[in-house]
Image (cartoon, rainbow, N blue to C red; front, side):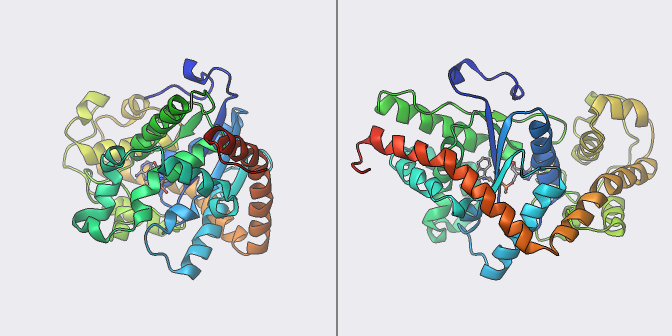
Length: 348
Ligand code: TYM
């Protein structure tokens, strides 16, 4: 766990606190994305820190995307950001491909990052599976693009779910090596911000697997577009064990499914695991699940309704993304220019 955005670490001395994070527009937005990312982005925005949020479409195409689906998913993700409380006037909201400086800086970082570092990335191993020879070069180089996403804005804090921690640590390694190789302190050392009860939301069907858009079972996740009946049915069928809920967090050890549902309840209610267990300890899942469904519907229904409404006006979404990209470029353009200068690339 790292500290919140109010306390930048010493390594960031001289850098204004700035939050950056991104989400891939591939597949359905789900409860893991909401609790691990979107909800926390809205919280960071409310704390008044300058926040930049990106639909990372260039990351999405590291695996095959149908063009029409990608277009739709990008707009739907933008709607998800806005419906979750990201105000495109307060924060900067845009899609990655519209700010070419991301790809330009990524090339610099491809030349800084070492093959040995990339070979340690567990997400590449998971995604490429046994057939790594057939994976795209983009999928392999993806963490260097992610480092560029963050560092092109000199971002100091990166709110993410636990699965992205290794990539943010690699970003720090890349920043440190660049600064060292060129004898500069140009790039900050960004901190992953991984806090709260739901930084790793698990599958509803298997408490040892992360909730994921790529899980073939739709019952494993709650999608942000699910209606109230679907949410209730998925929670009702969620895997659990036969015991009652314990009265403290220690009692969740060895009970991954129970822990997951309690974590979800705590995160949705802005509470803690201990507080949830002091309310529900001793109760059976047959009593707890309906309460969880009620809470999930209460919190998610307004978001999915607003997403559906926004998706009726995709021209407005496109205009918001266009304005966001222009604002993002105001920050990114001088950073790429200075990077070129530091590296010795001649030009205006
Ligand atoms: P992505 O698109 O897979 O996920 C977006 C965000 O949702 C979080 N998340 C979860 N959190 C809790 N429980 C889960 N089951 C769960 N599943 C997903 C992720 O941790 C992430 O915060 N590489 C990134 C996108 C990216 C990025 C960046 C993030 C590209 N550039 C720069 C931060 C900064 C990704 O694939 O996330």
